[in-house]
Length: 406
Image (tube, rainbow, N blue to C red; front, top):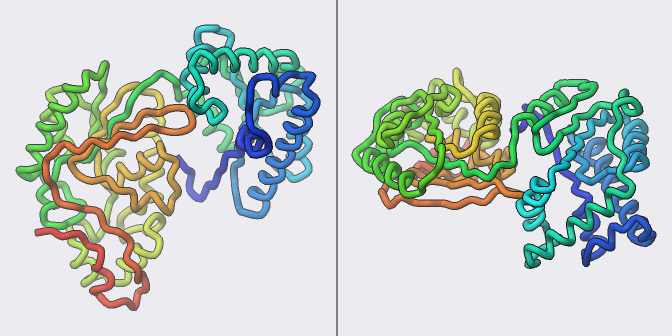
């Protein structure tokens, strides 16, 4: 989850390599393949040049230099580059000695790699194990004595043990906290909104109303769906609001209430329709359309505030296995944006319809999303950004994209 105003980008060296040369097999990584060594160094320099441009000229805050960096020579190159430009460096080293874990990791991660598209599973395993052998020839791990002046975390056997050294600032501290809370166990996260509420029917935002008749019907449909999935050790989370609790009650299983999952606070606009907001607060309505992520309702919250509020939820989701989160439109958008790596501009307009479950399965290089509509009708609460966002616009222009309601 992004910190406020924190901008970060990943610079994956594998992508630079693939743009320079097509991958054939492990022989590209042989320590005596001088032509390949030159290409790999050129790719590293090109990536570092882009890192410099991003951090120094594009107002970036964090650049993730995603590469093996397994030799002292390569890490020295990175450190010299950082010193020249005044950047801090934090190394992340993952060490795995368990053959079973390595094999499973290759199957989980490398089968989805662009290097192995449409390749046979066993051939991928064989090739990547040989590729690891190539790395091992010159591998020089971070050393407790020689590298005692560096900032780093070493992760052993996918989180069974950690070693942390010289954490310098808040960002590095948060990185360590994050890495010590995530896991690679296969699991799914089910996101859905509460059933349709009485205020949804009337086109009113916020509030704490109960479910409509269709909302109650959805709650039972959700219970049947979850039961049909046969999910082991499923945890259920809700907000403190009636509509999520009533939806969870139909499941007939224990659930945990999170105040952090409450819907965005609309302040003075709570329980108003969009038409009423336009009538009473036309300037506020326009300002929100101009920058929906950062706009804060008077006496209420912004999406940016909500993102910060949800950080503990995100961290706990990373620690868990199978979880069903019954939440609200703005909250679901924030959670979805985190797992799908959506920008702050995209986040407030992500579509999260009522009576639809999104099944998220984290995989290497992304997150698989499956949308399941449970066949219970509901009102549409999604409002697109109107073309005219100027404060002088006509009321009809402001209300062009307001969904129908009773």
